[in-house]
Image (tube, rainbow, N blue to C red; front, side):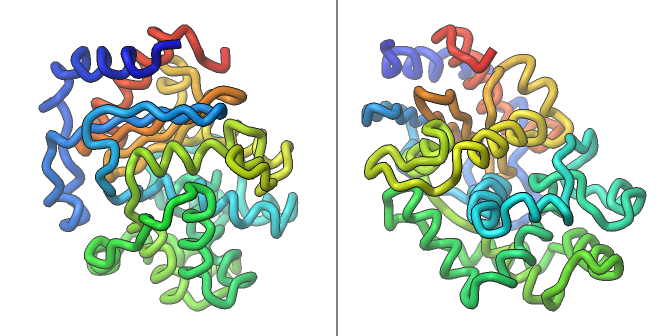
Length: 304
């Protein structure tokens, strides 16, 4: 498969999509990112790398980090994890309070904000230094030390994170948050501020394309069952209230973030990361969605 030729052609084909979305502005630090940034990176399990554009420039991965948090918590807690969190698509915006109230403080899945806050609470319980542990974990998955917290983004998240504060306080009132609210929010905001490139993201997600094992050294990070289930939740819940359309148009497990990044995997084959900061009405990258739709169409590869 000529992946390099395909992603170079895609970079040309998606040009008409630029200008149709809006850079996230509810987090002021993200609003500063130039809207025309664009990168694609593809990493295959046999060790081949392909990239175009700004694939080596670090950006704020935002909600993509929720996959890392789940992958860190799942081996520790096992199936007990699902006692405090669901695994169903939300059908609502990622920061919905209405759904959380209706379901009495149990988040619908780990990839909406409420669910990620519960996962953060679990990590606090099991790690004495959860911020350092998260960074070490992502660096190990990606095989890169060039992964870091963007403290300007973290400060901006904290300054304007009123809805997240409401979510975690509501869940605290329903006894689904154990740690102090301020500690949960601080660690969550740092988690969302992780900065890394498409190249490093694609490398990190190879563990999910490889059934829970790091391909570069055969270290098992997740059981096969856990990797399968995380992929399943990415497919059904990875794009908020656009998850069904993404599955329909792209046909891959994936996860987006309001920093404009999207990562997706083809099991047994590859991981692909795309970055374009302009978002559609669902909070997903306008150009990124189109890029991945073209990628699965042109390669003839999806999970279906």
